[in-house]
Image (cartoon, rainbow, N blue to C red; front, top):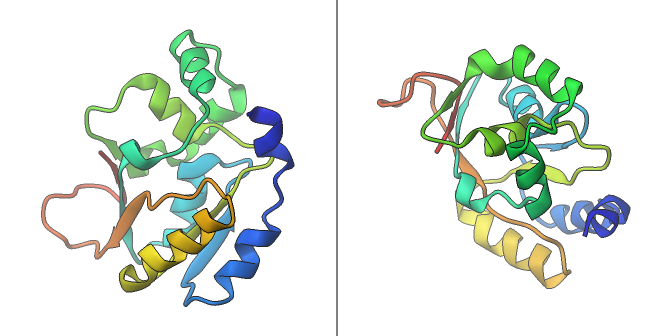
Length: 150
């Protein structure tokens, strides 16, 4: 599963994306999921992330649970952690979200009305895609930080 993930190119996803209104896109690599999401938000929007939708390799959770974590992941936590509010998220999943990736997938921001159609095309192409959250205005009630992880 790891080899398949790291050898899957982002080409197909980027070609499919050309058919949709993409507000922002980044490849999830060295700054991890949360670092790249923080960069995409650019202090203009906030994000609510649904951890039940985050795809990850099962063994990564087990390794993080046993504190087999990376120094780069800790640097990512130190860099962006103050912008993140974790709501009852277990430590291993936090680590997965901070963990740097050698060859991660793409993180897209698309209009809500296009999300399901975009997801459908990605899945039809055999890509492990998910809708993992939503973007909100900073003043939305109930959120204290730029990124809330539920």
